[in-house]
Every structure is written in C-alpha cells, then in structure tokens.
Length: 309
Image 1 (cartoon, helix red, strand yellow):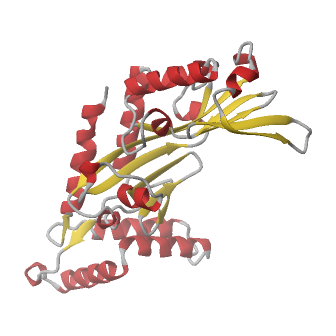
Image 2 (spheres, one colour; image 1 turned 90 degrees about the vertical axis):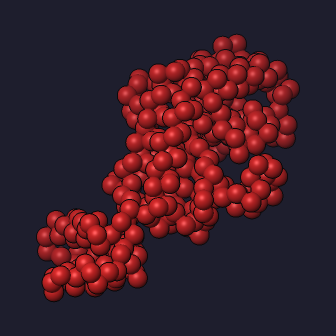
Image 3 (cartoon, one colour; image 1 turned 180 degrees about the vertical axis):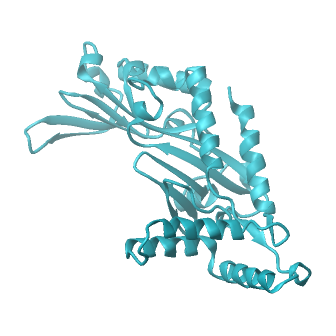
C-alpha cells in the first residue's frame, strides 16, 4: 500500500560514496550550479529523480512505479523491502540508512458507482481544509494530506494503459500523504527506510490510514416524508434540511468559514456552534439515513485490513 516515498541520504551516511558508480545507473544526467556555488548532479533511476551534491543524495518518486510496472497496484510490506534492496544495488548506496521525508499510503477500491458520486457524502474533517475538485477530493493541513480520486480517470489523463481487470469498473483510490515532520507524526527520533518494512511500524501506518478515514464527517441522505411532520417544529426542520440538501452541506460549512474570516459574529464560538447544529440536524433519525454509498465505502476501508501483512 506504499506508493510515493521521498528520501534524503546525508553524505555522512552514504559511506564511501562513489559518484561514478551511482551515475552509471542514471539516465538524463545534468549538472547544475546553484546561486551559492554548490554543484549538484541530477538524473533518473527509472521514474525516481536523483540529486547528488556534496551534502548528500535526495531521491523523489513513486516506489510502486519503480518496482512495479505502474502504481495501479500498491506495494505490500514485503515488496518495499525488496524494492529498496534493488535500488541500493543499482545505485551502490546504503539506501536503508536514508531518511524518509515523505511517503504515501493508499489503496484502490472497486466501487458500485463512479468515484465522484461518493465525494458529496464525505464532509468536513477537523484540522483539515476540505478542497473538492472535479475528479477528486482533498483534505489538507501542514502535516498531511488525504485524498479520494478516480484512479481510472487519472490513468487515462496520463495516457497510461489500464489493467484489463479494470475495464468497465469504477476505481476509487483513498490515499494518505505524510508530507512533513514525519518523526514527530510517528513519535520517533527519526524515520529511516529500514523502518518502513518493519511489521509493527507498517501496522501503525495502516491503523492511522484507517483512523484518518474515520475522522471524516460522513453525510446522511435526507428523507422528505410528510409522515415525519408531527408539529410545526418538524416542518421547519424539514425546510432547513431541504435547503441544506439544495445548497450542499459542504458549501454551507465553507460559507461559515467565510463568515469566520470576515468576523461576522462578535463571539468566535458561534461559528463552531453553527457547524455543530447543522451536523446534528443532518443526522436526525427518520429525517435522515446513512447513505448506501457511505456504507459501501466504510465496509471496503475496514475490509482492507486483510492486506495488513
């Protein structure tokens, strides 16, 4: 389930770095001089961008694309150890000692409907900025990014050959990107390549991937039934639910954030109170029900634990 992994191998960890041997495995080699006078050489190891300087070696790319034909399939825990062993042999570098600056953890799901149909039921997430796109849905903060997107649409946009088993299918990808301060996020003094294939660490990442999905507020479908109107208060609840359904709960939540930026209310707690009232309204029994699409996605994310090892 690993994909993109960015690395930094400091020169003091690289041992007796023989640049000439490393360069033999690279294509598209170029040499650059920075403004500070430092010279570095860059090239590609398959899809990996490799930069070599007097300070060390940086590597950026998708380990899945490096080790597998594409990233339509994700790396297992066993795959990642073999992939880095191969990379170390090709580059003549102790890759296992490299620091991990970023890694992505993802899984593809075959769904009953187009991936875009599920996005409207994935609402706000605390500490994240929700960013809907035409074919994807992003949740972003300064440390992490989680996203849902149409993997087939992405592959076609890049002109890639899709797996035959995906013909006529709907493929939704849920991906977690750990982009900053990784040692702090995982409560470790440092995060090295050798750690990524460790079983205990892998299970920790898997649990975090699943827990991050659970923190997203799932939106219910809204029912409009006269039989549920037993009082004027019920009537106004239905009217409010109709308005929320027409506008979209995510758009209403964004409008509340806009009000916060404009300091529309005297008391700061009014914004969070408004959001809480809307969430509670949208989960009223009988008037709302958990969407079949959310239930399907919930089930498949939970079932992904069979890939633990």
